[in-house]
Length: 125
Image (tube, rainbow, N blue to C red; front, side, top):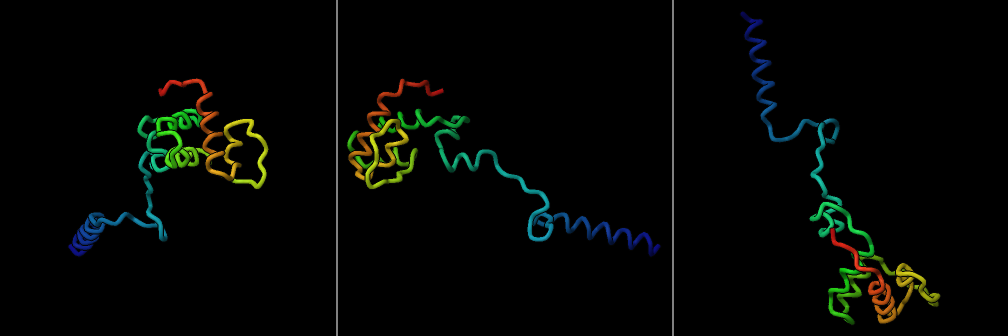
């Protein structure tokens, strides 16, 4: 009889521990780690995460053209796609990536505008 009571007590206490809200731990980490889908991508680029595909740099640069020209917002959009890395005397830009080297905001904006407008319109699929 004592054996049955001991087994019942162990099973009852084990089921009570299984009902806690904390996940089982191994050291200081949960035993099972589940990451929600797309969290890193959604934080980096919400538009791409919504479509389910990452967007190319060309598509993101063309999206910046929808913002009014000559505004700080458009330059901020370009800078988000290609972060600036100003140089004291940058060479003439041969591609859109070279625009980040211009120190003056007006020059950098004009450079990005020129290259973004020359990119063939790509489908947004």
